[in-house]
Amino acid sequence: MNTSIRNKISIGLFTLPALILFGFFIVYPLLPTLYYSFFSYNGSVSKGFVGLSNYVKNFKDPVFWLSFRNVWRLIFSQYLVGGPLALLLALALSSKS
Image (cartoon, rainbow, N blue to C red; front, side, top):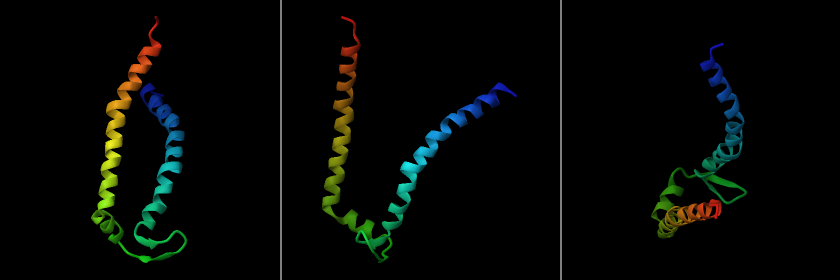
């Protein structure tokens, strides 16, 4: 067997468990969430199909946009402040003084 083909097969076999876990814990829970987002749902009983009106209602809500902005601020602050600080701390701990 060609080493190129053998390498591709081994890469596939080694990534398969990670893909299965990703699908089970990330993709599979998203499917019911996506389904329920198109219905009027109170947590126990689906009251009927409402289509995209839940999304339209959210996009018109100023609280949604405030929370959206706050989440992006948190993400950027973590990457711009927390990331470099963590890197500097790791460099300081790894230096041999």
